[in-house]
Amino acid sequence: MKKIVSILLCLCLIGVYNASASDEGRDKPKDPKPKKEKKEKSETRTGWTFGILPSVAYDADKGFQYGVLANVYDFGDGSIYPEYFHSLYFEAAYTTKRSGLFRFAYDSKMLIPNHRLKIDLSYLPDALCDFYGFNGYQTVYNSGWGKKKADDYISRAFYKSQRDLIRFAADIDGKIGGNWYWNAGIGFLGYKIGSVNIDMINKGKKPENMLPHVDGLYEKYTKWGILAPNEANGGWHPYLRGGLSYDSRDRQQNTQNGIYADVFWTYNAAFGEDKEFNNLMFNASFKHFVPVYKDRITFAYRLATQLTVAGNSPFYLNNYYNNLFIQRVLYEGLGGGNTLRGILRHRVTAPGYAFANVEFRFKICKFDIGKEHFFIGVNPFFDAGMILQRYRMDENAIRASIAENDPEFNMDELDNYLLFGKDAQVYRPHMSAGLGLKLMMNDNFVLSVDWAVPFDKRDNAGMANLYVKMGYMF
Image (cartoon, one colour):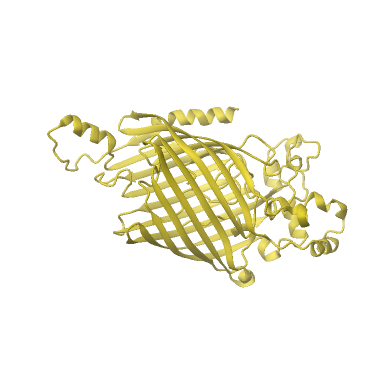
């Protein structure tokens, strides 16, 4: 409860921490109607604005986040407001579940004329990264095994692994004609994955709060041969990306009308022992924003898919949802605050999947603080996703591998971990619903709070599924 109160206080303080400077030296057009000029000035932002805030967030999967962030916008002469000429974003933060965030992002529509350039450099350490196995419901989720107060508790780290991610991305687009654009990108993803460092987690803790040294699901998957040795520890993957997009939205953030759609392919390279993980992925998305009542109510939905069309993709890349332009810190699917809210992060890991997000966006009130323009909104939503391409998990091969590599395991308990045949329900949809709260500044800076619950307890047995992030999910 204290965490939630702290979050709400930060929502109230966002205006206090904002500092801005406008370019007063710009030539302004004269208007013989001063009242009209005053109205236009209140609705348009010019010059540079600088905001520095505590990086306070909460994610049901990652815990309470604390740190600092800064965002610098250049609105230029205001001719394209609420769009901006340049944006520089800096953030350094850590969470109570030992997930780190160190990021720099640059976004410009003016550096290269008639093109948009976006650069992202991030280091994302995660000492307790979620690992719930493969194929969604085929891997059994026993909620009590990770909850200390449960009778069948094993370890809070049972469904965890350690993951460090280094990411560099440079993406550019150019106009073809009308609302059509070409897109290209280059970058790399570097993963280091392993078992949770129990000694590090236990450092400084009282004996009754220490985690036991037991095998979790990640270790069992490795022992049982479900995770190949050259996949289990991560790898480096330079990539090339290209595609097409259509954009008729009235604005990038706080979109009220229009369509955004894209199709693109990503070639992920791999070298040495990992060369079998060279792969080609296909992504497509369709986002539609429909004004229902003036600028007060908007109906918005997103349909998206990611498929492995050639080669083999390691599990950690299957948990990475590709995007043409990186706006949020990390896009992970399926499950979690970026794809299926209320469903455990990485709960649905597969080579190919599709998902949908549907929501109504209501503006409750608008107000100004100094020169900054704010509004508060709410959005009820529904999320759903399902597997389209599955991992081939052969029961006989897995049993043989367990007998050889984990002889102490009781084979009668295998159905507590994996289901086969019709019981696996690999293609059964995963669904959730919830309610969001939004606080927006200058139609660009959005503080988002979402709460959601799954329809099936196998996706998340808890109710504390709260996400506090920057920006709309789509």
